[in-house]
Image 1 (cartoon, helix red, strand yellow):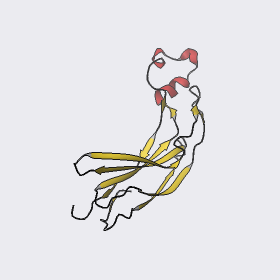
Image 2 (cartoon, helix red, strand yellow):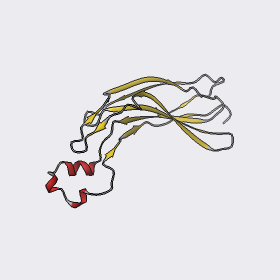
Image 3 (tube, rainbow, N blue to C red):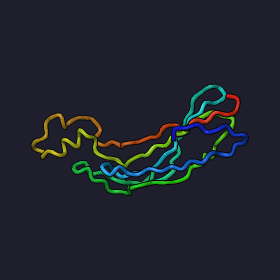
Image 4 (tube, one colour):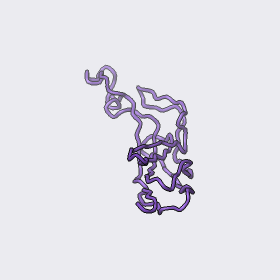
Length: 147
C-alpha cells in the first residue's frame, strides 16, 4: 500500500492483495477491511467500508475480569479485493484496515491486575472497559486521466 494506481481507460477494477498477520504480543485479528474514499461530481467527499476477510459479524465475548476472549480470531488473514463499484472517471483512494478482536482498555487492565479489594476508587468510572485496536496502511490513490 502507499502508491498511485495508473489512470485507466476502462472501468476494469484494480485488484488488491490484502494480507495481515497478528502481532504476537497482541489480540487475534477479527477482520480486514478496505476503505474507499472518493469525491463526487459536486465535490462532496464520501467513503465506504468493505469487510473483505474474517468475521465481521461473528459474536464473541470478553471476560471483563480476565481479558480472555471467547470467540473466533485469526493469526493471519489474506484475500484479494476487487472494487465492485469502481468508476475509472472518479478520483479516489483505498486503504486497508486490520481490526483485532475486542480487548481490555489499558486502564481497566491495570485495575483487573489488582485484587478487587486493593483497587483504587479511580477504577470505578464511566470509561469504556473494552476497546478494539486497529492498524491501517498508507493509501493508494487513483486519479483519472486529465486530473
